[in-house]
Image (cartoon, rainbow over all chains, first blue to last red; front, side, top):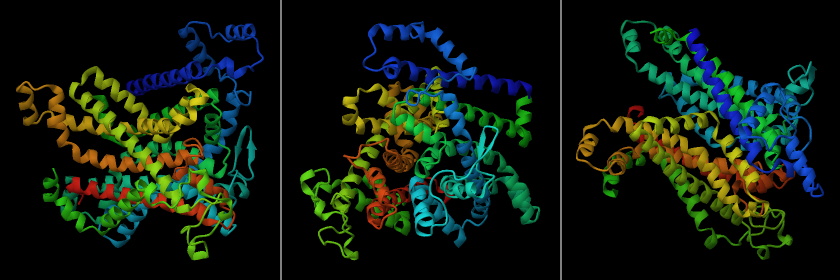
Length: 324
Length: 300
């Protein structure tokens, strides 16, 4: 067990180093940092002096070492566009994206898992066919179209809900939350549904496929033959064995939620990391792009590790294999 | 090849599936219309001389518009039908090119990785793992962003279409590589491949002539699904204002432009291209689902 955790930690460090290298390469080789920071009127001597001060003439390895250690100390450099520290810019945007993502993920799981189980247990039912058809359309409709449709219906036509921004927020020691005001919740509903709908269809389809696979297996047949009641069969024997894939889904979904939050945030002008990333691409603001990448990778690594540890906790077979 | 297709149960299943038939008809109409745009569209939306502001903001015909413009016009007086046909043409060109590049790249790398194994396999699969952790849209955004930094400003607009195609292709190749590699592992131990290898045939010949034809089924399914993903990616990136510039509109760009009319009464400028995009992607996905069922009899 300890061995396994250690192995995962070392792997994670390597992943982070790889991403840091990618981010560093962005800084170093995409565009010239000096020409981004200075104007046309800056003399060549001044540019050279700046180059020397920033350490751009040092050997590659030295620069990379400085880059990573700076990051570890929380020094992420300055934005080319706003001249602010990138760390502060990202940190102020993180709560908005995480709160949006968590609510979207919850929507996807609370609706997706039960409907996945239902459609797997009644593969020929009329309701199942209807749900499957709906999800196929759901997968095909781009996130931004769902967002526009919701804005049009609930924002413009009915006028029930706000269509942009976060509404009222409360500052909890650096973490601004929408969860504590009615206004904040109202602003959160439409973006969270937009982000959740796409994830929901994926959750449902994966749970359904997994559940159907399990229902076909020998131990379920034997259990059926022994006369174990269907209720217990479905919800104890079968569902328990679909939990491992479901946890994988949550891990994967998290990645999807973060990525598609870029689109959702753009449609709803939600002031999160995704919107910041989009702006940084539009203005070729390399430092922000690089740091966004590192932060996202860090979240990914954390979630993947949590998922792996949950596997061990849930599935005894994996523990045996690990010991052998 | 054609004779084999006609004898297969795919045709039989197709004729029994109303959803697949409807989807195929919609897809053929949309794709055919898009590629015939220069001949069937009444005006060319890129040609500045072909439209006038006098015709601006006309509603569709059934809401009392001008019969020359079936689905109405936008604020510049462009015919919506023509805009959509040309937009779909550009969207489909980019998506199909990206899909082909992703297929060739992914299948090539996957076959080679599965066949040779060892260090090459390890490197390709590690890259695939890292990329698989990042959703396609993030990869495409990143490649697009990097290209903005690398290319000189003067070349940016000329290369937009190429950059976008490549960004989409590079974010989609992984699925092909993994499927091809997994199939090679299954196929390579079968007797017919062993026989071909013992006969001293070139590895390339074994891969292309013997293994590839036997893994076409699953690859075809991925190609269909990825074509839909490519269309969605292009539309999303253009909608975000990252993909194509406004003077060469694709479906995504048209929807982005239409967003300005979300609050006003000119609903058709936004909803006509949106519905067109959704119809296209839904029909391709339905066909992909159908193909999956055909090639995976266990799920029937």
